[in-house]
Length: 337
Ligand code: COA
Ligand code: ZN
Image 1 (cartoon, protein in one colour):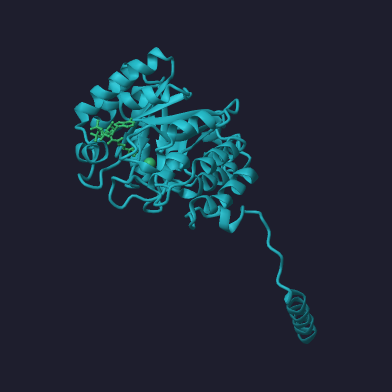
Image 2 (spheres, rainbow, N blue to C red):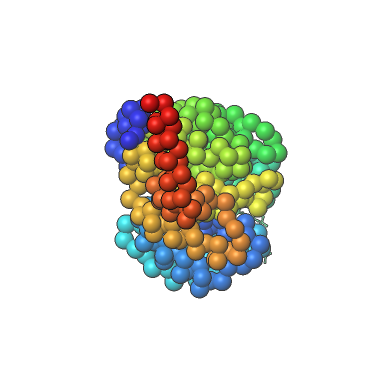
C-alpha cells in the first residue's frame, strides 16, 4: 500500500503521471552502431502499444552532428500514429523544423542549454544565437499549428561550468513561455541533480509559470535518477522523460550516461499508486527486446530482476531442507518438555 505522504501526492496530482519515452532519440543518438531504419520503425510501433503518453521518435538535426538519427525523415513518414500517443521530434534550427513538417509531429521539442559552454559544444552556437534561432523555429511551428516544448539542458549543473543559477534557468523558461511554448523540460543532462535541488527548482517553476507544462528530464548518471523523480512528484510535477532500458546520454557532455529508465520508473510509480496508463508487461517485453535492437546490455534493472512480486520457484533441495528443519523443531520441543 502507498504510504500516506505518497497518497496525498497522488491525490493532489489526480494520480495521473505522463511518461514520455526518449530512448529512440536521447538513447539512440549516443549509440556507436547505426540502428537500421526498419528496426527503428518497428520498435517505435511496438512502443506505441505500451500506453506511453508521448514518444520522442527522432531528431531533425544535422546528420553530421547526429549520424544515428540521419533517417529522421523516413522514420517519421513510416511510423504508425497510434491515437492517444503524442509523437515528438527534437529540432535545433529552422532547417530541422522545415524538414520535419513533411510528416508533422504532434510536438516540436526545441533544445537550448542553460550553460554557455555546453550550448557551444552541443549546438555550436552561443545561447543568444540559439534563442534567436529557436524563436524563428517557433514562428514556423506556430504557422503549422504544431505545439512547442523547450528542453533546457544543464538546468541542474553543467559538467564543464558547474552549478547553473536558478534565475538563469527560470529566465530562459520565461523567454520561451512568453513566446508561446506550451511546456518546458528541465533537463538534468548529465545527472548532476539531487532531490532537494529538484524540489526547489520545480516549486519555483510552478509558482512562476502555473499554466505551462513542466517535464523533468532526468539522467541516472550518479544513481540519483529515481530519487529526483520522487522529489519532483512531491513538488507537483506530473510529466517525466525516461528512456527504455535507461539507454542514453548526450554525445557532447563529458561523462553523460543513460536517462532515468522508463520501465523502472513505471514499476515504481505503479507501486506508489500513480496511474501512468502504461501496460508494464508490454513495456518490460519491449525493454527485454532493446538489447537486440542496440546489440548490447542496457542499465535497466526491473527487466532483469522482474517486478517486485514476480515470484521465483523454490530450489529443488527446498523440501529436504524444510523436512530437516521441522524435525529439529519437533526434537527441540520434545527435549524441552
Ligand atoms: N538538418 C539537416 N542538416 C542540417 C541541419 C538540419 N536540421 N542543420 C544543419 N545541417 C547541415 C548543414 O546543411 C551543413 O551541411 P554541409 O556541411 O553539408 O553544408 C551542416 O549541417 C552544418 O550546418 P551549420 O548551419 O553550419 O551548423 P553547425 O555546424 O553550426 O551545427 C547544428 C549546428 C545545430 C545544426 C548542429 O550542431 C546540430 O544539429 N546539433 C545537434 C545536437 C544534438 O542533437 N545534440 C543532442 C541533443 S541535446
Ligand atoms: Zn537527455
